[in-house]
Image 1 (spheres, rainbow, N blue to C red):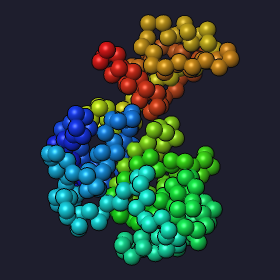
Image 2 (image 1 turned 120 degrees about the vertical axis):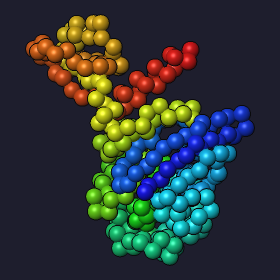
Image 3 (image 1 turned 120 degrees about the horizontal axis):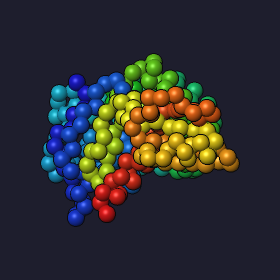
Image 4 (image 1 turned 90 degrees about the vertical axis):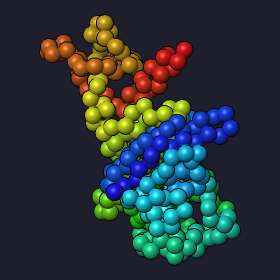
Amino acid sequence: MGIELKNITKRFGDTLALNNINLNFDQPKIYGLLGNNGAGKTTMLNIISNRIFPDSGEVIVDDEQALDNDCALNKIFMLSEKNLYPDGMKVERAFEEAANFYQNFQMDQALEMAKQFGLKTRKKINTLSTGYTSIFKLIVALNVNTPYLLLDEPVLGLDAQHRDLFYKLLLEKYANNPQTIIISTHLIAEVASLIEHTIIIREGKILRDMPSEELLSGGYTISGPASLVNEYIIGKQVITQNTLGGLKTACIAGQPDPVPLPENLELGKLNLQDYFIQLMNKEDSDHE
């Protein structure tokens, strides 16, 4: 069961957007789909949701071919930058249309979320700001209750307060109604704590596909007075390093030395954003 991509390839002219992709999205789990601009993330999600078609390969949803299969596709909801509702439609009417199409749509919760976000449901969709257009689409996505939820740059245009509220509501929904959620975003630091399984894609190829905890076990951080950190990292593979005043933090590949740390130095876990940057930098250098 789940969503399976088998040998998916897609070209746009001379651009190879996806190159023989094989992936499994088991349920329930929160996946992070990470990659630079043009990596193929949106193309992949559009193919899963049947918005575009692969040149070769197939998508399987719960052991059924997804192509032109309403039964399989009704299990998937994709949130994207595009607004698929008529611009002149009011928010409240759009909620009603969603409820008509998705039998498990939770209208009461959608209206409650609108209050939490300060979204006025009597407004027309085309009069909403960029941020509130995103909020409207997020509320729909959080309440359709399909087994598979695809979120492509879900917090586009949201301020920090509303992004934080969305992440909290997403976790609440996931805890109460477990489902397979795929989040594609550039805001890696913000979603890192949500992601259970990380997929990293670059130029149409999968570079990493593994549980986030396992992925990040290959490095660590060291922080403390800059002079002590500089001494500690000599001869080590430094991923990134940041200095603020007299304090410094370095992200290091590998495992820490099996000896007591010098006094005033602190050991920490590698974070997902630093890992992603390190991997992209390595790929850049390998292709020079």
